[in-house]
Amino acid sequence: MENNIFTGKTVEEAIESGLAALGVKREEAEITVLDEGKKGIFGLGASKARVSVEKRATDGQRAAKFIDGLFEILKINAFSEVVTDDEKVEINVQTANSHQVIGHHGEVLDAIQTIAGAVANIGNEQYKKVVVDCENYRESRTKTLTSLAEKLAQKAVERGRKYKLEPMNPYERRIIHSALAGREDVKTSSEGDEPNRCVVIVPANLKPFDRRPRGDRKFSERGERGGRRFDGRGRNRDRGDRSSAPRSPRPARAKKEIRFGTFLGNSGAGKTEENNQE
Image 1 (cartoon, rainbow, N blue to C red):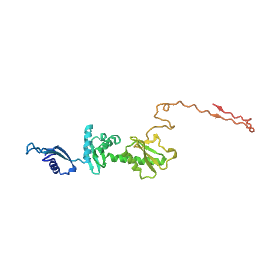
Image 2: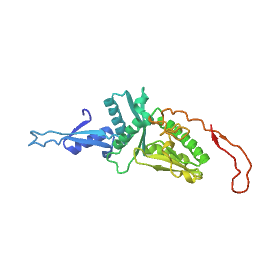
Image 3: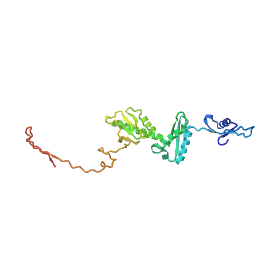
Image 4: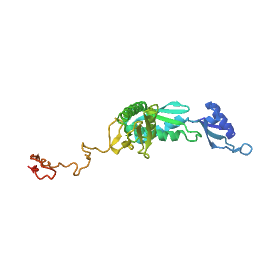
């Protein structure tokens, strides 16, 4: 035996030899027939069958191996380890530079997780969920989004207005929906198309004039309003045209000087009121 290669008079004999040596069942092994062998004539020219028998990698091991190969291609100093490998696969990434692995709002980590999930489920009849994490980012992000959801839900109820959050992936939108699912004073929905699909928080006391969330009411994860910026008079401050140019002062409004005289009858003949402009 060399490098998990086993021999026998027949292919079946070589396979059985390999399974026994590795202590695995046939369904748990990856078997490759290298040489079917020859019987020869009167024992002359005979050769043994040769097969390669290896223990089949689990779904998690297959995904972790793929991730490590991806890091090598991207020249990222990181490695993955399988945490759980049963009905759900959990893989944790160890690295000295977490930003390279996580990316902005977890975009890189989400992409790695999506591809790893596809690799882990090759040949599976039923899809198995795969979660890839790095430095406990998933839990931290969940806490951030839950806090944001509660904060904006309170604002929505106090002001009777809808609030639209920034675009999020399906995983993060589910966090927002779950965080507010138990409340009766608000409800949530998703609007738009991927990748710009957003969660909208709608209060039960929604005011009639605010049936649709405005473009300048889109909130980021810090609860800050994004989109267009307006000054106190409703003018767009982002435009570099006349709205932002200084205006000449208006002339002072003329004061009215009112004089009173004697009013005789309904004809107005005796009316001496005069309006003079300064």
